[in-house]
Amino acid sequence: METSDPGPADGEERMVELRPRTRSNPEGAEDRRSSNGSLNSTPPPQPAVGSRVEGEGEASSTDSPPNSTTTITTTVPTPIAASASATASVPSPASGAKDRPKTTLPPQIPPAAELRAPRVNCPEKVIICLDLSEEMSLQKLESFNGSKTNALNISQKMIEMFVRTKHKIDKRHEFALVVVNDDALWLSGFTSDPRELCSCLYDLETNVCESFNLEDLLNVILQKIELPLMDNVQTIPPPFVVRTLLIYSRHAGQLQFNPSDAVNKMLRSPYFFFDVIYLHNGTDEQGEDSSWRDIYASFSSLDSKGMCYRFEASLCGPAIDLYNCMARLLCHPLQRPFQSHASYSLLEGDEAQEIEATV
Image (cartoon, rainbow, N blue to C red; front, side):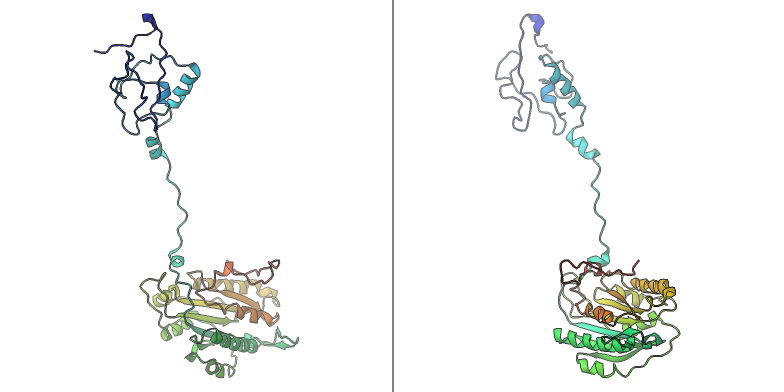
């Protein structure tokens, strides 16, 4: 039988100060008194975890179970009562956690970028592909002494400097030479002796070429190499990597590229890199400006990993531009940054960067 607490109508006015149930006071108030003022009364049953509404201690206190509705007999100041009623409408932390929207995760990194090999200085197998189209024989480049020279002559010199410098960095590096006319021809096999490659470098002549089949070049490379297969790409260093360096100078027509599955697998390998130096005459012939930019941008389809380098230089500019492009390719492909992050200025205030014709 429920007995209501005596109120002011019984002639006895009591101001009972109740302490709320808090984390520091989980049992309610140690001095919580019963209706007759005794200290030894049985504490009220505790509600289930997460079912208590914020502000409950200040707004109400009862000895009955939490689910029952009782009448508050304690005198409460008006401001406190107003705040308690407003607080009672706030959902519990448990229900708020369910209604809270999930945190949006950042975009996932492409799998090709995740499968990056360790930054080690392992041996390189460098395949230098030299274009022998007639554009390479045009006397447009300005040499160091101010005279005019052709791109083939400059390319032969900068290839020799590249091979000899790489050999001094690591004598385990190997080099091969491929010449590109209408078809690709594997001219010199892999060798670690720079003199062997340079011996057949200066006996080359340009030809009138009608087309350029990029797929044919990649198939020739695919037949001559065998890429490493590692159990764990990200932690186990490869025994070597393969890098193709193409020096290309044609301006007419788009690239013919319809790769097979085997070629696509080679291009996606974390141990294969395809760097390009594209020589154009966009500075001299303004009508060809948009054409060479489209051809230059089309080489991006060869790079699914974002780790290959592409440079462009004008056939009508100074020859030093070609040497600079070749010098920037000396870095090991596993140890160099993304091309968009690379900086080649020595002075802190020199922040001028090249504008690349990329899409």
